[in-house]
Length: 223
Image (tube, rainbow, N blue to C red; front, side):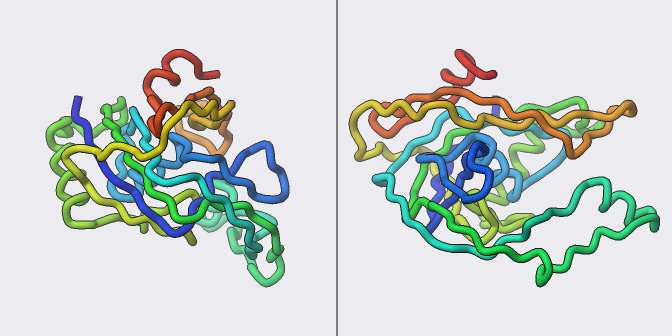
């Protein structure tokens, strides 16, 4: 198993709770799916699946309220696919769809993340774990990325640093974080291709002295 350890920092972060339908309210800590998205922005391949094993919270959880401009609609995979076939239009006019909403964000965050990856059935014929490991290692060391890594939303960029060992957290005590989003399971069509329909899965982690053992709680309880 090829694993990595990184430190992620940012001025703001927003890991949206799905039960909040209108206003954006962040979880206290990152969700595994948000961190997988951050890692995928550095190196993505359909044959590579990232798995978060541990999250370390280095700073006190600090919330702040702001107002942000958002779009009331988003592009669907169907409309994009139709335009690629010259059979539709995937245009969205921001001036017509803009809406101002309040958001409760996390401010001044720093996390340690321990993760590994596995190869899926969609890997290329010559793809090996060692090859993928070296590609991601090189990109992490050089600060390269496909999309700018972010903390939940694209307007909140993240600084990512690879390390040999993760520092200990200054936080102490046990915190029950309640039910949190673990990941999204995307449905496939009759041809086996992924669609834009997804079912959420949740888990219930506990933060002990600033450490969230994601692998343990995911194994014990994911629904």
